[in-house]
Structures are given as structure tokens and as C-alpha cells.
Amino acid sequence: MPHQSTLILIIVAGISLAFVFGALANRLKLSPLVGYLLAGVMMGPFTPGYVADQALAMQLAEIGVILLMFGVGLHFSLSDLLSVRAIAIPGTVAQLLVIPLLGAGVGWLAGWPLGGGVVFGLALSVASTVVVLRTLQERRLIETERGRIAIGWLIVQDLAMVLALVLLPAFSGVLGGDEAGTGTGHGGGLVALFEPRTVWQALGFTIAKVAVYVAIMLMVGRRVIPWVLHYIAHTGSRELFRLAVLAIALGVAYGSAALFGVSFALGAFFAGMILAESTLSQQAANETLPLRDAFAVLFFVSIGMLCNPAVLLVHPFLTLAAFVIIVAGNSIVAFGVVRLFGYPYRIAFAVGACLAQIGEFSFILATLGVDLKLMPEAGRDIILVGALLSIIVNPLIFLVIDRLGPWIKAEDERAGLGVTVSVLHPGAPVAQGNAPAAGKPAEPEPEADAALPPTSLANHAVLIGYGRVGSRVGEDLIAKGQALLVVEERRLVVESLRARGIEAILGNAAQEGMLEAANIAGARWLISAIPNPFESANLVEHGRIANPGLHIIARAHSDDEVAYLKKYGADLIIVGEVEIARGMTARIGRDIAADEARKAAPDPRETPPASASA
Image (cartoon, rainbow, N blue to C red; front, side, top):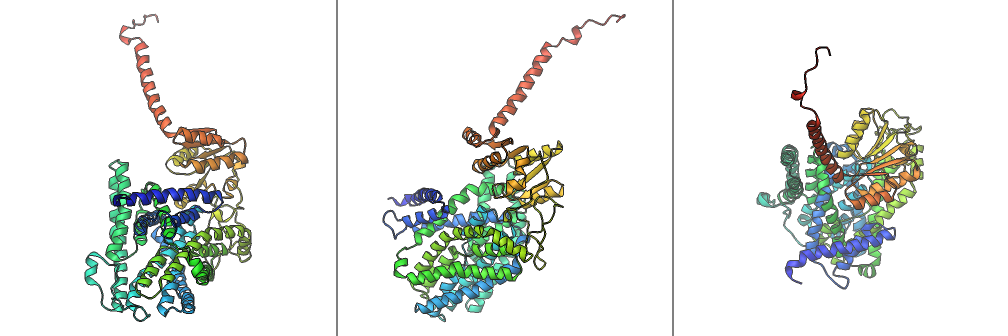
């Protein structure tokens, strides 16, 4: 195969195999992530057939990490990050104390030096950012309190790992590995001129770099990044706007890593979080979505490529110990810390499940440990297999939590930790026995409670989505005095509607209990203003089952989508392009009619004067 086609072949093979195995996994009622990982195993050096370039695949995967973290930053404000620092910081510290101790114990039993056990334990304590974010997005939990805690925890973990990667080479000789320089190994550009010479200089230098980076992003980035996007938006070129969004996400991420030694993920997250303050944040998120999903798939494929399944046979007990530490150890520590801070069981279980797997930083730590002769190569292979198994099992953990939902809800209510605020509208009745814990604000999460009381509205319109299309529909209905209930995923939009006295539910309409809470059985119209035909068809189908007499209106972009939505029961499907053309021709038709009317009308100059008697 010519060298020039290596990149193309990796992308083609990776996406094609991911599609095949992902579809098969979905058919077997498993998470598509399992299929993506198995596709990577098939492309790796430990299975027969095509062997992809691992280094190149990991670089492609990093693009997925950057775009994913940039997208999360667009939905995550600085105030959200600061609001969870009180639990994210001590939680990360507890995790980095307990899990490395367990890892050191396993390393000691395996006969490794102290440093090998420490590196092993550190690698088992760092959750995969990509896995957590995909899980939160699939479950529409990004903007919930449990989502904010999990993401804040990840950010603190990333910062801690930056320090760990700095200190490991410095302490390598003390921990039983090769003597190494104390430089960070991350810094680049001008920063590399000031590399430190001692351990304490390395630590202080890294903290200073991170502090300078945060200060620059908050003081300069908050002005420059939104200004650039607004300037490009006024050019009217969607292509330039899309390029600007990608340039900001990729450029800030790479520059942050090259100049300040922070991870690509952290740099992209800060860029997105700063841009979130702009009114163009939603459009920016939409522009990056297709690329983000494609490259995120390549990330999971690249993980599978690193996995050597033979480790299960050569080191079964060590692999089992690593798997138990990853899944049970991390989740128990996280669960205990969250409960210690007085949060409800539902949040503790969710955060614990989010952190019960490992990923990208674990691979970096394991590779560094092997390079420094702190840990044998078998340790790295065990970490990789443990990561693969933990990612495969992670969706099953959430499935178990879902099954335990009624019990978790009962425990929260028994402890007085339930939801106190109705998500339907301000002033709605509060369920009894649901006081917040230890002064913690109640969490209005629609997805947390399938038994939400339905709205009192009847013969009303249920509008799904309040974006560019939905907001125009909604405002027209409000102006006409039509009873309206909105289902929307963006918290700020929901809060704005409620402030105006308009009933709104925060969450995704496809989630259990949402349509019931909107009283779809008593509604007159269901209006799906979301652009995704697959999600829309699911809503149409459930709405038609719940209310056979419901008038269902949806939007589409093609004739195929129209047929697809009609198949599931939509009464009227509006195609944007068709309506635009219809509006244009209608205007032309009115102009032509006006011209003909003027021609047919008698000329007033030729009209005889009225008689005096008249």
C-alpha cells in the first residue's frame, strides 16, 4: 500500500468497520461503543488481517477529543465550573489517594517496584473524558447537576494529570526507574526556554504555566474569540463561519498544549466555555456536530487497536484485579464522596458510574511509566485491556442504575433528598417529603423522575424544541393566545420561558415520562421543530399511540424524510426548501395579479365627469 494512502485507509477502514460492528452491537441491544472498540481490535496488530498505523490513528482520535470537549464547553459556563469546585477538588484528591494505593498493592503482589505500582494505580484512577461525555450526551445529562459534577471532576483530574506527567520523570530515580531530567516534557515554543532544573522548580513552573494560561483565556480569550466569530458571522458566509469555529477549537487546543503543557482536551474545553457566552454558541455547536461524532468514533477504534486480548490468558488475575479497581474502586470512592457532601443517591450513583472506566490519560501515563522503566510492558497491556473492558461494561452499569431507579428514588425520598422544584412551570405544586439535603439546592431534572405530575393544560399545543424554527412557531402561538407547553433541552431557554409565564419542561421529549408530563393525551397539537428526523419520528410514533386524535406537525429536509415521518403518523410535514420556494412564487404571483388588475381597471382620465344632477 503506498505511504500516501495510509491516512485515507485508516479513516476508511476505521469508519467502515465501526459502522458494521456498531450496527451489529445495536442489533444485539448493546451500546454501539462496544462495536467501535471491537472494530479497533480487528484493525490492531494482535489480530490477523489489516494492521493500521496506531500512532496516526491516535492523532486522528485526538481531533475527536478536541471537538467533543469544545462542544461540551459550549454548554458549560464558568459559573457552572466554579459551582462544583467544592466537590470536584476533594473528590479528585480522594480518588488519587485511594486508587493509587490499591494499584501499588497489586503491583507489589506482582513483584513490580514501588514506582510501577504507583503509575499503575494512577492510570487506573483517570476516567476517559470521551466516554463520560458520550454517556452524558446520550442520556441528556450534560446540563444537569450530576453532569456538571462529573465534568468538573474530569477537569480537575486533567489538571492533576498534567502535574503527574511533570513529576513522574522528576521522581523516576527515587521510585526505582531510570534517572530522568526534571523538565516537563510538555512545554514547547518560548516556554521551553525556561525549563526548570529541580523537582520543586518543575512543580512551581507547571502551576505557573497553568495559572498564566487560565488568566490569558479569561482575560484575552473572552474578548477575542467571541469577537472573531461575530465578525465572521456578519460576512454572511456559512462556510467561513464553520471554518472559524474549527480553527478556534483546534487552534486553541493545540496552542494550549504546545505553549502551556495542558492537554488538548482542557484547551478545547476552555475555548468552548468562553465561546458559550456568545449568542452564536448554539450555531457553533451545530457546525461542529458531524465532525465531532465521526472523530469520536475513531477515538474508540484507536483504543481497540491498542488492546492485546492475549493478556487475558497470560495475566488473568492481574487483569481481573485492574478491572475491579477501575469499575468498583473508582465508583465506590466517587459515590462515597458525593454522598459525604450531602447529595442525593441518584447523583451519587450517576457520578460513580461515570467514573467507573478509564481512557486516554491512562494510556499516556502507562506509556510514560514503561519508558521510564517504572513499569513492565505487561502493566501497560493490562491497563489497556482493563480500559477496554471497563468501557464495554460502563453502559451496563447505567442500565443497572436505571433498573434500580424506583429504589433509588424511594431512598432519596426516605432521606428527604428528592426533587423539590417542578420542572413544568413556576409555582407548580411541590411533592411532599422532598426537602433538599444540607442546604443543597434542589435539582430540577426531568430525566430523574418518570413520575412527574402532568401539566394542567388541555387542548393545548406541545412544541418540541425552541430553536430558530420552534421559537418562531412558539411566539406566533403565544401572540394568538393559544395554550402552549414547550419541551426544550437548554436550561437558559426554559428559564426564560418560565419567567414569561409560559410552561416549559427541561429535557428531551424522547425520555421516559416527558410526553406524559406534557399531557400529550389531552393535547390538540404536537409540533416537532427539531431537525433530526430519527428523533422526530420517535416522538411522532409515541404521540400517535398516546393520542390517536392528535394533530402532528413536523419538519423535514427531503422527500425521503417526509415519507419516513408520514410512515410513523405525522399529519403534516413542512419541508423548508419547499416552503421557501412556495413563498417566493406566491410573492411573484401576487405581483403578477396586481399588474393584471391595474391593466383591467379603467383609466380615471378616460372616465366621463359625473352629471350635475348626480
